[in-house]
Length: 240
Ligand SMILES: [Zn+2]
Image (tube, rainbow, N blue to C red; front, side, top):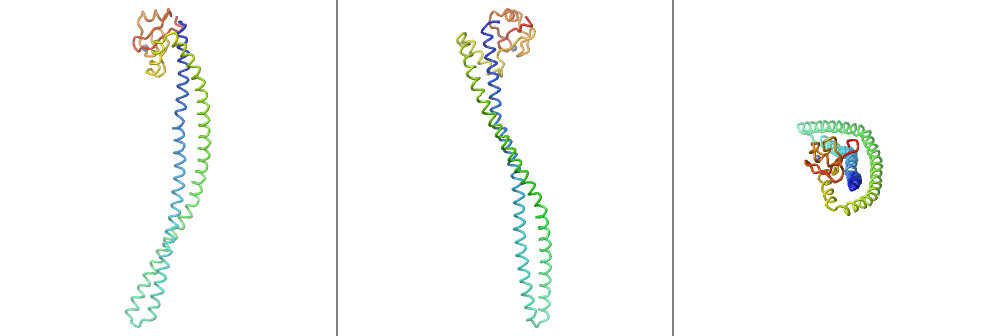
């Protein structure tokens, strides 16, 4: 195999690793955002449950005030009843009192319903609170791990980048055009610029190469490209 091809393969191996590192690093913000969304959902559930409890309390107080007003009204009617001498007016007041009493009964029924709902909500809130706390701890731990992972990956990527630049410089010094071609192919062929032959197929595009190309690749005296996809191809010893 031509020496420069070995260097190209080494460069490609470094570039592929770098690409994998960057892919992992770039995936982390998305992972963290997904975790945050899970935490937000748990928080929202808790807040909604708490808001419902507050709403019930407000409604119960409002009903209490309403019932008190009705009771005061009844007391007023009763005083008026004592003062009146007209039978008609007495009956009318009696009717008003009965109506107010019926209203109070309805209000109290509603209050009981709300109290029951409030009691039922207590364990629901406790569970939502526990879940939120657990989620918070879980997410914090995972975010910490993710951040640490990024730190490690960035460190390794930086080291690898240095190694990569050294190999790249060697290739560029030996054959600048080839280096440019490699760079272009690496970008356009999703990280597979230099590929082995598989029998008489290019393993990049899986097309059959011409006999001349096959022969050149097997001789290994020069850098050979696939006529179909343009990738740099080489012959693996087991096929030689
Ligand atoms: Zn090809």
